[in-house]
Structure formats: structure tokens, C-alpha cells
Length: 408
Image (cartoon, rainbow, N blue to C red; front, side):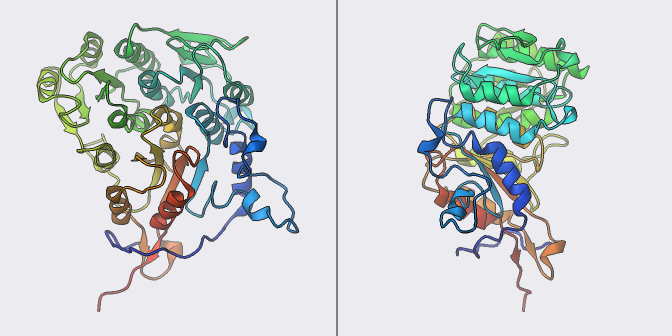
């Protein structure tokens, strides 16, 4: 039985227990190519922390080479790319193992890595029915990591997206020989509109909720990607003091949906929220700074909208505000496996106090037998320049199920 909400432990927990090595090694093999290499430009041999499979017990470096703790601990798994391009490639292959036709995606979505707004909006296409993971280009060039992932994934063709194997969003690379559906738009708001049109056509009806995110504040917009990938709600864009015509058009097409504004008044003003209120029921989800904003979204619930992650037993995804496109790269992790919200760090070597307090609030506990408990798991996105191994270790400790002392 699980128990123990909101405890403040304050001390390090026990050393990691490796409970199932074989499945973990298979996962590390899938992710290994992405570790420490961004866009295929870095020699993997330069990164000595890259995990390998088949290391012998007589090798004194075997423990480190197998990837502990930098790539996996008992409660965390890292996709350790040096940039969002590599992270997206690693995530896509972790979610779609591509060992058989039914483990391949029907399509992948390709977006320019420098267009974080289009990438976050494109996360909507990871939701049902398309289930299209995101890969990233370098402008109109196809990086090695992306090409390798595309070859390995072998998308079969999405009937509800024109039988496309690749959904191209905006100005991006065009993979040779692949069937494509191209989505175009003059700006982020128009691209979000094109993405939502495709999703609505595939789903057969518009979603009953939309998210409006700040187009000039990526650190506040990032958490929207994971929810869009899970729920299929579009991520639309607003300036601080003005609402684009394309955003209004999408909301109108959704026939007075529930509108959720992500971010504080400093990034989307109260006047804009008032204007949105004329198009549908509107609520703001916000925190004063990016870490608190992501936590507010993780906690939020309104009927069928929101993660409502206020108790133990969840998956979480951790990324750095310094790499906005990682939100899109990681979005398939929020829409599969242990499903869970994106949480943020602002510095590689520090776990923000509000995030530590939140993880303590939702830390699992047990009073008799941990086998009967519930568990949290965290995906760490990015290399040590994004999130250090020390921070990963602290996250692992905060996710660990703990015995609850009975009250005297």
C-alpha cells in the first residue's frame, strides 16, 4: 500500500539497485548513438560515458561503460544528446523500437531544430491517431543522427496523412525517396494552424481544448509540448499584447473550446486573456518563473484537461530551459510508456528548490511492502551540459519509493 505524501527527506537515499539489467541494456543500445553527439558532427569516441553492450566482468571500466549512473539509474533514464537533434532521434527510437511492423511509426514529423515554436506545435501530431514522433533537421539539411533514426524507424505510411512517411513542417529537409505531406505557414501561428488542420482531419473532429503559449518566451511555452503529444490539443501562439489572426481562426474552428493560457501576465497579458475569453472559456495556468510554471501545469486539472500529477505513481520528463527544442524532442516520452509532464531545470548543476519540493510532494511511500507500492520514473533529456549527473542522481533519489514511519 502506498503512502507518504509531502514528506521532506532532506538527505541522500540508498545507492541504486539494478533490478533488471537485460531490458535496460537493450534500451541503452537503442539510445547509445545519440549520446554525446549532436547532428552527427561529433565523433562518438570523444565521449567516454557513451554506454556499450557486451563489456566483460574483468574490465575495470565495465560499470561506467555500461552507462551507470550517467545514462540510467534505478529511477531515471537519460537520452544524452548534445543537442535537440540527437535527443529527438534517441527519443523516437526509444518510443518506437522498430523491430517489427507494429513497432514502427506510420509517419515521423520533421521540423527545423531552430524553429522551436513550430517544433512544439508539431508535438500535437504525436497524439492519436497519427502517433508521429518528431525528428529535427538543421535548416534544409538532414543531420546524420536524424537520417540514421529515419532509416531505423522505417515509417510505414500514415493513411490519415496522405499516406505520408514524413510530415514536413515549414522549411525543413526533404528526405530522399520518402513520401511526404508538407505543412506550410508564413509564421509560427500559421504553422500551428496547418498542424491543427491535419490533426483535426485525421481525428475526425476538433479537440475540445486548446493551449495558447507565449511566442516570445520559450521557457514558459516548453511544457505545452508534452501535453499536446498526449492529448492532441493544439499549441497556438500569442504575443504579449496581441493575438495573431491565425490563432483566432483556429480557436473559432474549434467552436468555443476551453482555452488554456500557459504563462504569467508578463508573457501573455491580461488584455489578451480577456480577448480570448470572447472565443471560449479561458483559464490561465502560470507560475512566476519557468520552473514554477511547469510545476503549475503538472499539477493542473480541469475536467479532462491537465496532468493532475499531485500524487505518487507518475512518469516525469526533465529538460533544460537552455534548449527549447528539447521540449518537442522529448514530447513522445510524455505520450507513451509512463506518460507524464515536462519539468524544467534552469542550470545544469543545480536542482531548483521548487522542483525539489514538488518531487518530495509526489514521492512514493509504503508502510509494509514496497512491492505493493506505486513508482515514479524520470526521463532525463540532454547531456551533462544540459543536466548534470549530480542533478540526475538527486532526481533519482527524490523519485525513489520510501518507507513511511507510522505515527506514534
